[in-house]
Image (cartoon, rainbow, N blue to C red):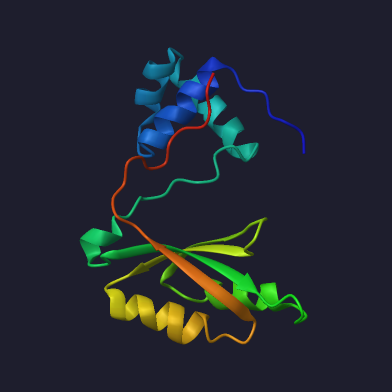
Length: 156
């Protein structure tokens, strides 16, 4: 994969869009000290390069009544053919699994879960996920509070 070279202005645009995906081209061009047409060209180039993959609303699930947020580590049975893929597919179909990541290390997957209450969380993790024939073990970590959310790793 070829690294994409970005300059200080590109980083300003990216940072501004991460903070406010609804920022107008006028706002972005003023922030980046560019004409509107130059700014729009840069944004389109960032989109074409795949640096900007889309524009999304950040939903506060707790406001919608999903008070339980947890990260569950999943270990799959490596003796079963396609075990990891089967568990990934199961989790992709599960609405309460917000994010699913394949990882290296002692576990195979990390799953971000959002549930209305502990009963719903238990139903998913203990009754459904842990009982999946390809799952060897699960370990969950419950969210207490948030110190930082969606930081910006891009520094220029």
